[in-house]
Amino acid sequence: MSDILTIPRPDDWHLHLRDGAMLQAVLPETTRHFARAIIMPNLVPPVVTGAHAAAYRERILAAMPEGADFTPLMTLYLTEDTDPEDVAAAAASGLVTAVKLYPAGATTNSASGVRDFDKVRPVLEKMAEIGLPLCVHGEVTDPEIDIFDREAVFIERVLDPVRQATPGLKVIMEHVTTKDAVDYVTGVDAGLGATITAHHLVINRNHILVGGIHPHYYCLPVAKRELHRKALVAAAVSGDARFFMGTDSAPHLDGAKESACGCAGCFTATNAVAVVAEVFDSEGALDKLEGFLCRNGAAFYGLAVNSGSLTLTRAAPQVFPENVATADGPVTIFDPARPIHWTVSPDT
Ligand code: NCD
Ligand code: ZN
Image (cartoon, rainbow, N blue to C red; front, side):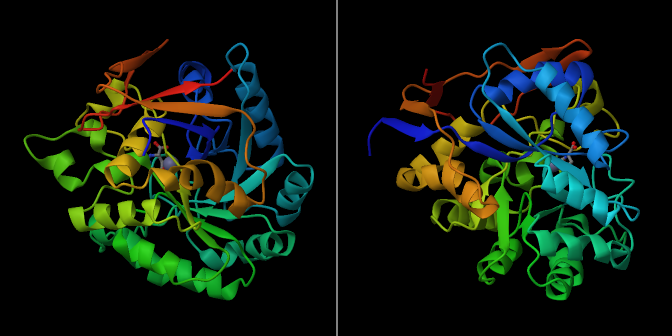
């Protein structure tokens, strides 16, 4: 395969941009490579209504770097009080592209998430009726369940029952981290997709815990053992259109990560495309890269592939900056723990 590849500008189907000084600092890292992204609504307070999403979208557009060509695809944070009509109006106006389900307490800023899934049934039914997809953080929060098992148990206890009870609901199981999730997704014919992050393609739980604790590798769902990482790589490079890129780039200030109770989230916006290219290259699957980065997700969401292109070039291993500076302090960029030979340049 060639050392130069040109692909359409990709999409990031799961991104945290935050707000204020953090938004200002991290947005250019995404707009450099990605043409669109699904914007996570877990701000404090969360983006719950159409009015919140419209205001957040304006703040993102105001923070755009000069000359950037980027469309934020907004989401609403599903709560037990979400009004189905507000969701339907926000979807009909083109303001929101999906609704996000966080089980209450599952991850960063998820306190307003769902405890009783029956309470959100009318919203899910409305979404199925109007074809609005549900993005799911797939982990149970039951303290009895081991953190490494929380994704697999979620499939059985929540995801499968919700899908069975709501025929026609389009669901994206986000940032899958287990072979169990890959097997579940590949066992469903229609209406279920999954995003995979760059970091879960290259790290396993040893990277977090061996030789000292490495807080910048800690995210949720937490990376699992190697057999699961291999299943994710196999799914990503398979060409199966149910799998697509969602970086889950989740910036936190270094002080909040390097702490006695460090926040979950890896900041990967800067190097996610290069890391994924490296993985596909080492698997001999560069011909499937465009599907994973640019086509599969767009097809699942019913959107056109982006215009414009990126050129990827294989050369000597590249060195990424260590961090991005924000007005409140640095944010460490994900270290892929392996040499990355691909450089990514936007075409003009
Ligand atoms: C995300 C964050 O920091 O908002 N953290 C993470 O570890 N992925 C939340 C999330 O997507 O779970
Ligand atoms: Zn996330």
